[in-house]
Image (cartoon, rainbow over all chains, first blue to last red; front, side, top):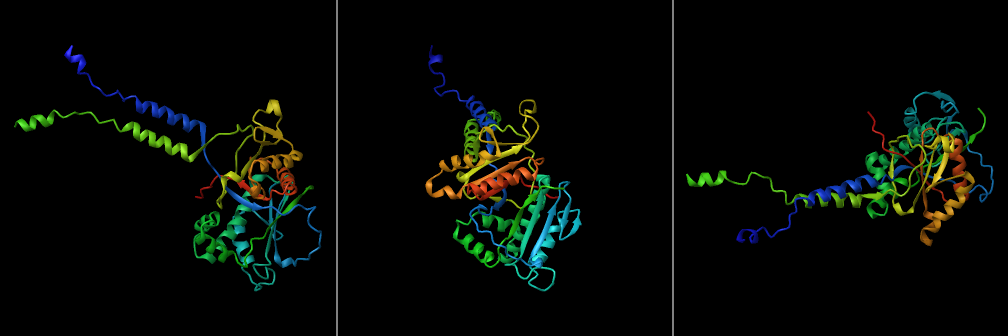
Length: 187
Length: 153
């Protein structure tokens, strides 16, 4: 009698860990880690709202990238195999400041144009677009005196006043002008 | 000598009383960092990778559009389709979908809506540019090509 009365007064909690594990596994299965990263892009306004004006942009201020339906790449009228070469070419083009006669007058006037075909694959387009954006991020990062990765962190969090200051300083008079043209229907 | 004997009798078991607490902490960590899966994705999603990624500033302003071949080809055919929320939509329905998504947001934030594309690598640019044109008409001009990080050699 005395023995049974003296039995441990605590609740047996050894299965608590198992219950918690079950809950944990349930949440692991039903949730996804938020993947909210990607390549950003600002679309131009609705074509019906803008007045159609013919603006002549000098040939030298446009850096032309063409992608055809079989995913072949042409940069400044020359075929290219590896999209990774684009990055250095874009930097050279934008930072030319009028030195080379065939490249841009100034970073403000430089425009990078990417023109695809309706049959171009999304995969190839992303590869090319990634390089062009990367080139701009590299240049901004150099102006801000940080690494490319750090620059992208700053640009993604402009609500912080310190970041905002660095961001505005590096972006001043240095617009990112990437034009994504309407795709061709033919070839 | 007696002292030594006592020590050897010490409990050889590892105390496990803190284990539930540790697991609960893990659980809370996962509950906070993850979101519940809202939609079942009915299109193939082999998303091309990129390196120059940026994070979105406000998650609540994002609406997702999925594009790719339907997973159930016998039922929906093998041509790439657009999926919004739980249903397939046509290109012409995009404007209406954007309006619906905008209506979910606060009035002051409506023009800040961001559309995130989750597109299969096989989709052609013709479809993408059609959708982009509709987004321009719907005045939802913030766009993101949602991609995973590529790790370069």
